[in-house]
Image (tube, rainbow, N blue to C red; front, top):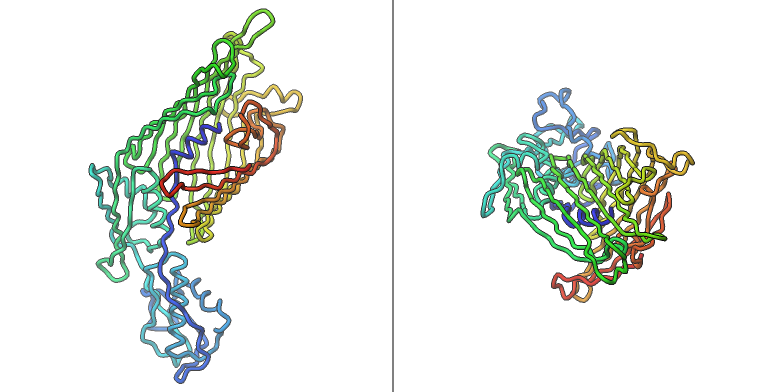
Length: 482
């Protein structure tokens, strides 16, 4: 499970796009102006509202932006407002619109009679004009589906830079693709055309690996091969298949025949603010166990699959929050000399829901996640043998949480990074071994060889890393404390 997660984290890297818009510097509200008008009512209205009769003026859909005016304690109604005061109000409202992503929406003052005691500020909503995709790839990959699946907004929508960020992340989520967006004036007033420069390289990748992450009983030396295919359906989707197998060596000190194999599949496809992910894996192993009079072949296999759907709930200039829900299934069995050990047979399924929140603090990134997992009777689930003694169940209830903090920085012109992560699990029911929280290995608490692990129904772990990009050449040296 740890290796599969490691492969997925290497192959699937979601970019975090943040577009900044320049805001206008605002001054304090002038307390005394030589020429001013007594105002007791401030109204924000959209450009297409009927201003001919003040009684028919409709509040703007951006009326919440008025909070920026009252947030400063230097302004209250009634008051006397002149030209300088009006400009201060306009800048404050404009900056609030920019804060919420409406970078092409403008607020202005139209001719009006201020002797009525009412000041009307007019908002011209910035709308999306044409959305154009310019494929600059050596071999064109992009289609209309590439654009439609990526961008959450369509022509005629109110333009919000948060939607553009989401679209860019969808376009750039595959490793071989890059995209940039330019905003240009549209054909009509208030419209802005979105022009996307898109470029994709070779969509196929092959990665080979060799490490000693296995165990002596089934082969410590592990070789792996991963084939990935970007933009399979030209919908910004991603697919990879990865295989791992063990290699025998004398230092394993294992007798007889032994080995292990793992095969994992992954596919994901974004659609505007949604992301659908399908994954599955199959693991097999065999080892020789010496008995009193003869040796036995002990083997086993396990399979698992998962379907997950996530949706972006909220996005701001400093954060984004998403919700995810999914279903999963798994089964496993073990054998002695090809005879199944029925008491060790497992087959279960269930669902899970979770929240993910990312917050940007300067150059640092803080990620929070919480998840609830529940087992059910789906997939012809089998009761766990441990249920007889109330020591486990196939209908588990598990809560997990994680905190990850990443901070890149430079010191003496060298690029460094600091990462710290905390993961925890709480059980609401007795758990079988497969559901327990396990530590002791390179994917949990490092410093242990993985031959012996510590597991429990609940627990937590804390990992820390300090990395150095050696001489800024792309090679990293790091130290970890867990």
